[in-house]
Length: 605
Ligand SMILES: Nc1ncnc2c1ncn2[C@@H]1O[C@H](COP(=O)(O)OP(=O)(O)OP(=O)(O)O)[C@@H](O)[C@H]1O
Image 1: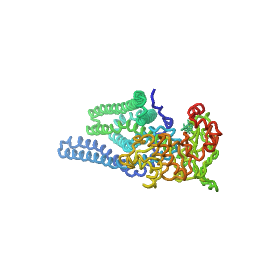
Image 2: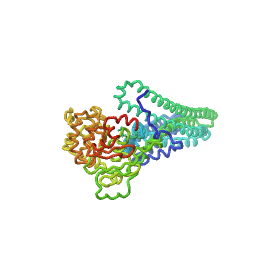
Image 3: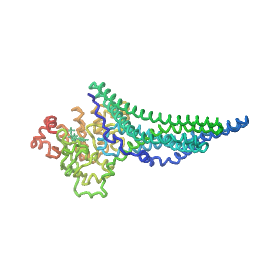
């Protein structure tokens, strides 16, 4: 069995059935707009360069029918010089095109990536619960790279090659229309085949990109969970899960390659056959004296010049399909509505007089992706935490304590009822104000790849060195000073170089550094040893004395930090009172505090 969870590609994981490639790609316009002048100039330069290539056969025709037939060395030299000049100009113009697009397109990619990152930060937690991180990572990396490549190459060359092919055919038909028709006729089946190919390739391209996202998730989980993998000796099963997924990606990529190969074979063969037929027909007509040798040479070299624009059609179309898929995947995320835009009321309700502290009124909550037959996690929570009061929240495992704490900073949105801070509905508060009022610390402390000090100061961007030192003291996180570079020590990804207790203490310091008015702590001392816990509690008492706090507690020692205790049971607050009173009056509370919580929780989640 593998320790890797099933990849969660459920969101945006399948190709839309009636998607139009052009419509998808047109969505890139707002990003391309600022660089449109350079892009159009580059396309114009490339068209001129490509058309210069078409003039070369005409010079050849002039040379064969003129100076070569007349044995005029001066004319031959002149023709040679002209050909050299045309070739040099063509190469120079293609170089100029590349220079024109390089820098602007890198900035388009950077702007799209920055927007995606900003948007991800604003999306609600419920969105991140549903989406696998690898799917988001692959959108921010592989998909955006595909888009830059599309804008740099296929977009321009579909236009350039289209113009070149039209101009080339016009030259061919004007030189000798019967021979020209021999080359034009195969274009009809080619166009039909290309549109058939487009539909099939679109579906496979989407599958390939989604599977790459799943693979990214597995790699990420394997790296982050390396301790579990090693601890449980799961290398083999982990490798097996990885191999199975990469096998899927490989077979989808092969499917793509087969489709491309089939298309390419047709695109290469049909024009070659047509050129062969035109060569035979043209030679017969020159032998009959119907056609000049120069015209035949010019005709054939024009046809050969057009080979590349026609043959490149296959992979240009494939790259455009990949880009359209990448665009769809990018906008799958960008179209998700950020919480703030969705639900902020137009007018803020007035603050209720005399109504202070943190209040839950008839709060109900159901996870958006919970099965419909399951009752809501919270079914009507009424609770008032007075200003300056510390309320411990106690309940069996899975009773919804973490869920309730997540509602206060609006990591999740209440389904029914409301939460007020000093009488003001939290949905009426601007996010910045809410974040400044409420600080949180969770049981699973998340640290970032930054210094220990930066991780703590994240809790209050305007706090200074003094605040940092005070917060470290309160959270008993003075161990930081003993790190090689003190508060400037990099703590590494997720703070994995620190112990669980050290990480919890840094997260606690982050919560208290700004001296918040409201503090929400989800069992913040669970990873501490008894001695450190006592020290943290002593220091925390000082902080809690000046804030209004909701503290999820599993152990009597944490409960004792609180003025009162609320018991959460079956989605409601079943009892509120002091620790002593609840011990006397509530059998459920007694059993939770006497250490039978685990069994209770398992029996009655
Ligand atoms: N993102 C989610 N989507 C769907 N259901 C969820 C989600 N997160 C939690 N749940 C469910 O909500 C219920 C309450 O979970 P919660 O984590 O709030 O409990 P808890 O009381 O904090 O438990 P513990 O004491 O073990 O930390 C559980 O049944 C859990 O399975």
